Amino acid sequence: MTTGPAVDVLKISGLTVDLGGRRVLGGVDLALRPGRVHGLAGESGSGKTTTGLAVLGLLPPGARTGGRVELEGVDLLTLPRRRLASLRGRSVSMVFQDPSTSLHPMLSVGHQLGDHLRHHLKLDRRAAREKAAQLLAQVRIPNPREALRRYPHQFSGGMRQRIAIAVALACEPKVLIADEPTTALDVTVQAGVLRLLRDLCDDLGLAVLLVTHDLGVMSALSDEVSVMRHGLVVETGPRERVLTAPRHEYTRTLLDALPGRHTV
Ligand SMILES: Nc1ncnc2c1ncn2[C@@H]1O[C@H](COP(=O)(O)OP(=O)(O)OP(=O)(O)O)[C@@H](O)[C@H]1O
Ligand SMILES: [Mg+2]
Image (tube, rainbow, N blue to C red; front, side):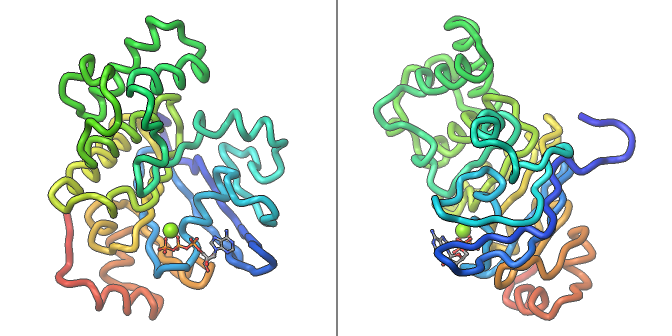
């Protein structure tokens, strides 16, 4: 974790994305800091997922990008593909709505976490197994050693998402992009997964971008919030300010639609 004044670990400026000849992002600005959760809300199709995928370099072939995505001062958009691939999952990681996106159904949890650790951190088999068990403990999976031998389908949805988070954390990223991480989960387990993300952010000094269309979730968890509409960030600022004194009319509309204000 950094000491002294917080610096932006990820700085997105003027990010444009064209997909299939259509401008999907029109110049997005966002800044993430270590140990802070930045909530990103906005209506369906506003470009939240596209922003995350652009940071990870995972846009579909043919996508055109402009602007800058700087990770600790290095522009990811102009990096050669191979260097970007080595940064992906190491410096920036992503957790998706559906945990099965990140988990292989035919491999035990220990096998896939271990592979990841051996590949990225160059650990030997034994050290990788040790670290895998630690990671499962960190995401609060009960009996982590025994859990390593089980397969993804043997866990509940909430536990699977925790394992997907463990995979995302395996290489000690600085930035974690969580795209609707609890939308697919039963409402009774959503809060636990969100609390986990908040704690990981606090304990590890991770910078988290929490993508959600649920303003209640966002307000309960975030330090800063941004609101997207039509491929642009229309409002950004500290949570309290944006939620109590929104400057953009669209943010006000979103807040008015919120059934009762959630705060921590
Ligand atoms: N592969 C693609 N090719 C062409 N257009 C795409 C592609 N993926 C997304 N889009 C378009 O880009 C725009 C932004 O989509 P995106 O998925 O980023 O929105 P979102 O804010 O994540 O929405 P949601 O809340 O529904 O997840 C949408 O208009 C969508 O139709
Ligand atoms: Mg999306």
